[in-house]
Image 1 (cartoon, rainbow, N blue to C red):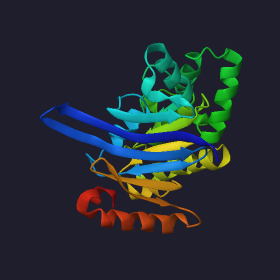
Image 2 (cartoon, helix red, strand yellow):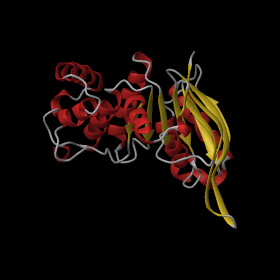
Image 3 (spheres, one colour):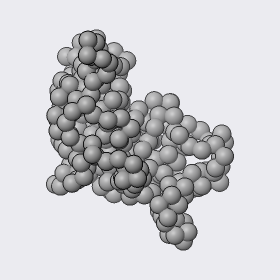
Image 4 (cartoon, rainbow, N blue to C red):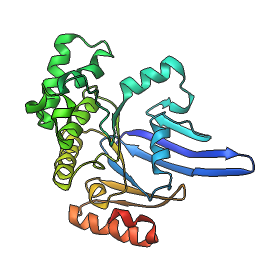
Amino acid sequence: MSRILKIEKIKKCYGSKNNITKAIDDISFDVDKGEFVAIMGASGSGKTTLLNCISTIDKVTDGKIYLEDIDVTKLKGNKLNKFRREELGFIFQDFNLLDTLTAYENIALALSIQNVKVEEIDERIKKVVKELDIADVLNKYPYQMSGGQKQRVSSARAIVTNPKLVLADEPTGALDSKSSKMLLEKFNYLNDELDTTILMVTHDAFTASYATRVIFIKDGKIFNEIKKGKNSRKEFFNNIIDVITQLGGDLNDAL
């Protein structure tokens, strides 16, 4: 398997000399192409800071982040904007759809920013619409859609540009259990059938059980890591719960 992402001894500190908080404290791991990795941890564990550093929203204090051969920590200005636009797909908890655009226009915007030709935009949207089962909402505005529909539109926008890596921050956080299950099944489809590489932050054990590997973070460090392997999703869920129990009361909100 080819490596997509390499995190090398990264640190992220906040505060001044006398009062330094280490949000990330010497974390290293790799993600291979086609993996679906979940990052779990309690509030304040550093999981969102980690995602923000990978997505270039935040800068590391020390260490390196490579997406294939690109050292993300060195990118600036236009190169950084181009990298975000072309190499990464983002899925947020609160959807981040533009209210004044229809679902179709929200998805198309990601491509028109890249100067993709109109005919190709239509072709590519038709493809993701089928994959994420959102044909019935294409002409609707965000306020006319359910949370689950909005998140599937947001996912379509993230993958329509064929990014090397999709970053999802608590993607099921604003969804009910039925919509969550439907979205996660779509993530599995994208991962299994289209070889989409997904890195997802979640505090929820059920959500994490859809991934192929879970990395647990505590106090800015990697606490544990487990792989699904040949386990069923239910068995993997139980393994995740076991690690959460080892973490102590830190992840009560994950149960």
